[in-house]
Length: 348
Image (cartoon, rainbow, N blue to C red):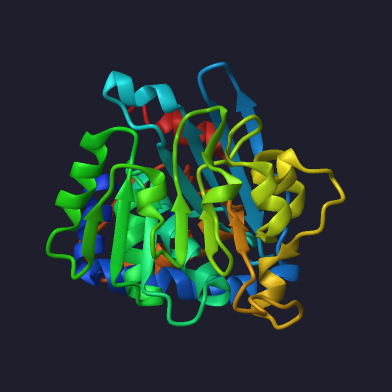
């Protein structure tokens, strides 16, 4: 049997490889790099294919596919969201992704994206805050201290210069876990007994809770003028975190309106409620923060272009490193028309 050609071998980045790559590059450096890649792709937003993610909902969670292409490369992510998994000792979110060459259709990367999604989500949050948060903001309230929380805190430190995080979760063990993981990070960590306490003195408020329900993590009376809200927990129909009155007081920024109106906080509002697309803020075609008393809200649900950016970044950074293996996952017969013959010859 003829050994597979180099062309037919696809780099695969495992969970262990991804963790190795993070430490090889450095966590904060990688978060800054990912934010830079996402920003560069958002600035060329019109070039991309765009569609709301393809979702399969059940009573206990959702499974989604998130595809996009810039005409040269194609990428997609498979991702689930099952809040009940935590009670069973499983991850709420798992993911993997693929990057392919549009000209041949051949995949050029297969990678885990559970860790990578946490990194790119955090990078996206801090990137949005770079344009929307009050200038000189130093304190963030982190409400919801689950699997995403430490990544969010570190991204805001690395990209926005946050120095203090005030933590709250309905489960004190989650807050203790987050505080323990952030020890030695360079952040001042304050564990709080309530969401209201966590927000004291915070210029940025990040909400990241997992329950698949219309919850009210923030009520209108909790939110003062001049803050930036980074709402990342509401990401599917019937799952929100903010009271609708907060939305009506805020200037709302989104990734892709057709998806956010289905999945984001703005599913609570009329379909014609005005929102601003974040890519237009980055290109200077729309205003971001315009005043000291303005409440800005990034209604983040995650969009395929962010995953595309992360996939391209990983593909470029693994070259020359030991942080991947090569998979023989593409048929490569000597004669492209003789796939059957290749199978037959394998018998010997």
